[in-house]
Amino acid sequence: MAEQPLVVAALSPADPLGGADRAALEHALRLAGALGGRTLAVTVGPADAAEVLRQALACGVQRVLRVDHRGQADSDAKARALVAGLAAHGAVPALLVCGSRSTGRGTGATPAFLAARLGAAQALGLTELELRDGELTAVRRIDGRQRERLTVPLPAVCSVEPGSARLRRAALPALLAARTAEIPVAAVTVPAPRRPVLFGPARPYRPRPLVLPAPVGADPLARIRALTATDRPRTAARVVTPADPAAAADELLGYLREHGYLAHLTREDDQC
Image 1: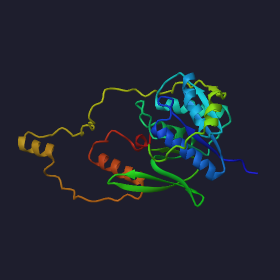
Image 2: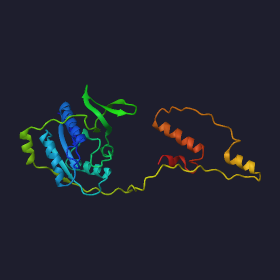
Image 3: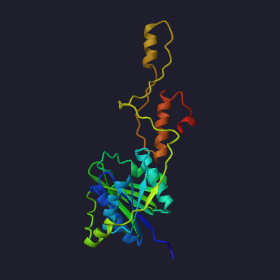
Image 4: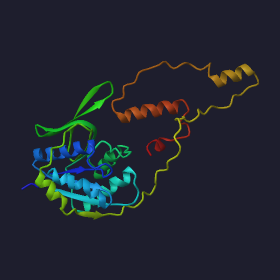
């Protein structure tokens, strides 16, 4: 008999069951029912973070887990701690649902880090998420008031927008039972990354200066012409339609190399 898929709701302790977390929890409960799977609510934080898990239990989640991590507080560190906590309890999610961002000055980057750490597909900022004809489908907003419909393969990490689902009301017996329920804890230690990201002051982007050869000759007019390249043949404008992102990157790097912006880089450097 095949093991039931595990649907995980990753909740933020900063704002217990805020708008996005409410939607994420409801989506997790619905999809677990549609998939015939199990549910697990998890959060990363100190002892008082257990409150959000008690609310999840009252709403119908089968299992909960608090990951006790007090190291770095950036999005990648939280994602690594959450994944380590799940692994410590033998939890392998088929689907992880979380809010698009928390109200506690959240950046919205944690879902992408979770997908990278779990080796899962990602679909972020969703307004709809449902199981249709045996496939997980999603809808998200794109520019120009358009909508993009996605088919999401499992395993996957999905972040949902506030208002994408309305959380069911907890029954009184479940609320009372959740007050005294034991909250499992996974204590994890996440080492600092080998190459930590260094943050500096925000400033406008400034491209590398164009490398030009020094003009030669005694005639001032000839030197100006050499500097301004007025004697060189003009390159006609053209529209390119790369077949995929890799081809688009090659096209851009080729243009920059041709015009001297990347004269000091090799092909190997482009691939680093």
